[in-house]
Image (cartoon, rainbow, N blue to C red; front, side, top):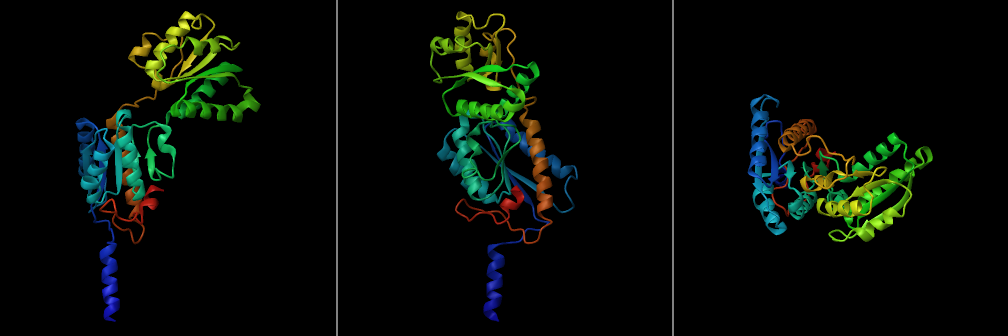
Length: 321
């Protein structure tokens, strides 16, 4: 009898039960003080506006991260995870991508949900590494569907693609080719030429000579902003921006520099409010709160891990799902 009592006490100590009276902690990984301040203001407003049931409190814990993955790991494991976060909001842009990948990997190993409000790279799509990763902005590869919709709207039957020879370019081309194959029977779209180039190369004339050989005058371009400037300058010299040619660019190519060299009539796309971090933070916190309130309706909800060496959170995937 005494041994049974001791065993029960140990089990309760190891896996404390969360109740509706337990404060829930949301973590934040940011690169700017403004985003961090907006995060804590949003947490404060949730608590003040009676958005939670009586007795339920939301707590925010956050840090500013740099582009050093090792420092990011230490910051996460020393300041964020020990607070027993039930979820993490991540707002780290492209220069801090390695830190973002490290954070997502570690948080995923603990089976704590992480929601990204800024990254649109396909590098986070590997569920074997980023198994609890979510985002509230679409990946850039989703723009392939916009290409398909435009082609269908204007009833073009043949196109040329120009994409960078890197992970982002290959992912965009593959996504488009899959959609073309899926829609070929009903739309009859044909990729006449798929031209690729090395990211960062300065002379684009040779690349665009392949475009010039094609009969199609509809050109789909995926490039970073620096490469796009070089491509458009070379295209102008080769007469590929004259009347009759149609260029369709994706979002990451369109910046202030590219706008000075972009051919007249170019079609491009942009995600509305894509850079409104404050609105994204507000939306994600409300979604996370709704998920937490659904989670506590279940029995035997345990507290999240408190160290990066802990086993995965028992209820993490339930919350993620």
